[in-house]
Image 1 (cartoon, rainbow over the protein chains, first blue to last red):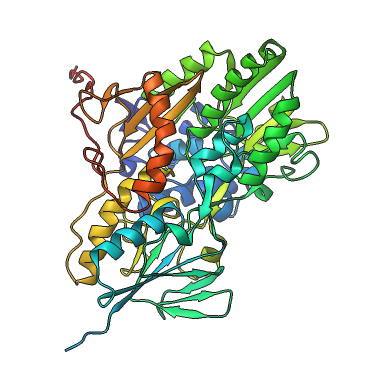
Image 2 (image 1 turned 90 degrees about the horizontal axis):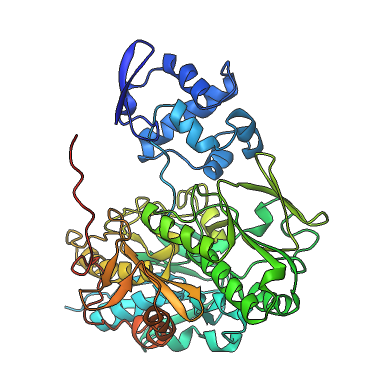
Length: 106
Length: 420
């Protein structure tokens, strides 16, 4: 675990850079997280559509959605998701949205 | 006073549906519980056997038996497709026009392959230079293709998770290495394993072991590749991120989803057609009288026969309690157990659950099969398992020492992490 300061607030991240407590996240932190994750900034409305959806799903279901589920239900196609969050939309969107890494399937 | 028998409807007569029906028929008298089970065909495939078909190590006929013959007497078998489930009316509609009311519903319709969901996958080259071994037609056609394949680039690609038996694609790679070596053409063939995961496998410990095995066998590993398109004319996989991988022969594990009727049944499934299910009790979260067994559930366990087998015990106990109006007593721990065929008559065994990753040691106790380590014993175990499947697992017999809960006795626990 590491403690980081984002948007003047101390937050706790795990080894992979994901939030341990999603309640520590605020919208002001998203851009800084995006820049570190290689997500093109400034964040657009489409980015926010995905980030909001990630958080909603996380709080409803206990895990963020996978890319496939995002493509089926976030209103953004998988192709677009890869333009918005290159190299792994579910993982990068989860990091920017301050939720844990979406539970992969075993 | 005679009480009306309760009605249990089971959807799917594969591994889960069959073993649950047989266990419940042993537990309940016909006067107490009517058991109906439905499936769209009468061919029960021993799915682990599909891996061996492309290499001529299993005959298609050997691994298929009639579904109805695997059921104890007193279980009503219907052969029909499922149209939909009406959760409110507690009724199943079949495509022969019949409707079946139920007191309890058990969903065990597994997962289906959805190759058409990936652009170009079923286009030019499908079943010529692009195959899957995840169904009988594909496995059989691939056997012919492999026999003629003597040089070039073999690419094995998992499009996305979840898939049935997540170790099977790795086993395919290991067996391909063995097969081409035996035929004296291994030096003329490059094998590449292309996965959407960030390593060879999902669990970190097993992933490291499996990655070093790939390396030893000179199988290249490409990770975090999400196949967006298969260009069959140019013979290349194109990733959503723009990366391209050329192939001469591609063995693709297509996307999986739930059975088609799930999407026709309002409120039953999630976006992918899997049923939201409590991880521990296996009761669906969509209705208290719907239970889910095996691949059809959205629980975070492997979609594998061993999981279904271990879930079976928990499920039967909970269904009994539900029908009696009691609290659900049994808790599934996510126990999975997989033999991983590594070629040259050896195999690896892994054993894990929701919380514990695969550990080294022995299974099921200190004297047992070696874990996370190649051995001939594991290979024999894998071969013997087919007999047990038909004669022990499906009829619902218990084997001493092999139970639902994951054992720890023979395992080497990782050293306690020291707090800094």
